[in-house]
Length: 229
Image (cartoon, rainbow, N blue to C red; front, side, top):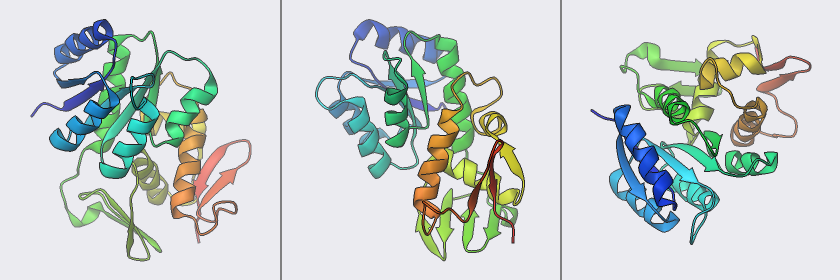
């Protein structure tokens, strides 16, 4: 089955060019020229990944991202922006985006980012080995669900990928470069700031006190590690 991609972009020439290239990569592409239409299509057709331009008529890409993250938490989200300021990229990640790409972009690079994200979305085969139990946390890799003390916490695909990696390797210190390679794919060309933002988002969801993290520890000068009792 083809992976279904939602492309929300108001500039028709960019939208058509991107659609043609993504179809050549084997994706089914749904198009929307406004944020409102993008939300409608996402809720109706349940695409695997949404590609959101930030500057849209009506509600902008940030707002679309927030809505989709709330209503379709399992969807992968990549933000497109013509802006180069670091704060614009961070703003999208803080809203729940999994990745970003600045315009002008190489269509092949976008396809690679999508494929990397889809690998994080793929379900496993449902065997008992797909349960990661690290009290008070548990991850069911088949259903892609995360629990703390038996209560489900909704994570984005990237947050779940990072949590799975940490919980499988308690006590191991990962550098930011390693986390980029393991979660976004080797050769990822984005800034490693994306790691810090996702760590911050993950801590906000799972820590008792995010300002004093117990489970995701900072290893100064290196990166991060999951606590080990």
